[in-house]
Image (cartoon, rainbow, N blue to C red; front, side, top):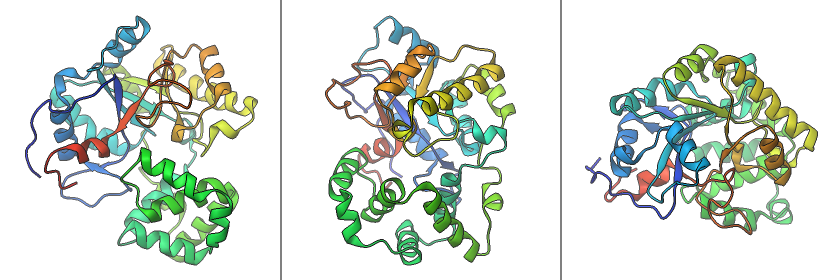
Length: 325
């Protein structure tokens, strides 16, 4: 990769930098959209390491309405082990602290099948496009059904928010999120995995952080926040009582482990509603992150403290002049 000018990244408003999967430079990615330690280092230098606020600084400025347009913070979603193994050493080199947003079911022995499916698609196929073609061959979905359920509008919106998504990526996500029910989607994916000679527990091994990891992060000055209990595809579509249970269980897990009041959340898959916001406010949550840089419908950017903007790390990498990401 080419070198980058330190601090060349500009912004018009305060926002978080959002990261998910990582792999060591020189090794193969284990999940879609995975970044290397070298790429993370490039991103931090491009953004400007000195402008990155600690979670404590971010929360103080947010509460006192003193966030500036140049302020950024680092956020990790989903509690993935690769974040600790690959990304944390890079942060440690610069003394940077981050928000770690975790969902709790995997810390209690649960398995998030969506993450398992992502690893399967990345490691067992030559490309994600090849996986999607196999997925539709395994469980055909007529094009007419996509159009009937509003695929074009969905794809246009998602492509605007995540321009790195391919056409096949958009089709797959639409079928997963909008057409197939959870049970049917998992049946298709489990069938593909079984046919490959693998199984879900085997693929799930070592994907997520442990409670010991969270304890270490908390003791090291990082901040652990909410991300629901079991990461539903669309938490906003759940009945209010189920949304509340998702976050109460998540809160209880983190609070008991860290011994601290939990004050922040990132909305899983950018899904939330007015009811969700009310639930979180009632729990004492003061800071919430969206999953993109778009303003919520009918609102200005960062208008509400539980709807703060974030930029995906991949988008930042692509903004670097001469980037070959």
